[in-house]
Length: 126
Image (cartoon, rainbow, N blue to C red; front, side):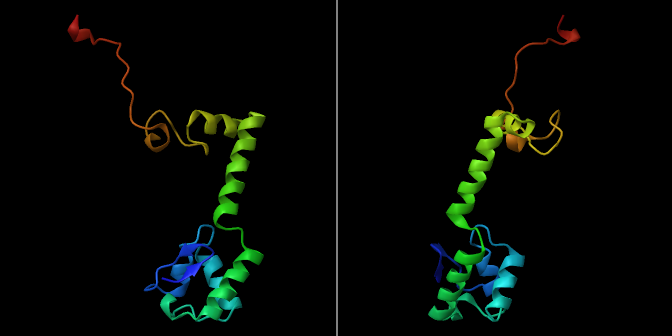
């Protein structure tokens, strides 16, 4: 498996797809990398030379925020929202959906499993 900026990329996949395994690199950025470094995007990652890998790593360091730096940047942005107490920050703090989704139903991914509240008895039980 070739290793670029601390990430093992799958060797059997095409170069464009393999580059997307790096956090912060999507299809568009991967295609741009291949185009600007004149690397054949259909070539398998295992066929990349050491020189190609060094070129890709250098390009990523110069032009793309990726991996740890990107994760840190996102975390600090969320922390800033929480500290200033804006609506989005409050939603992050409470673990609720941030982007305007409904919460009366759905939103289980953000809210977690249901917490049943004991309480109301039905009319039939009386």
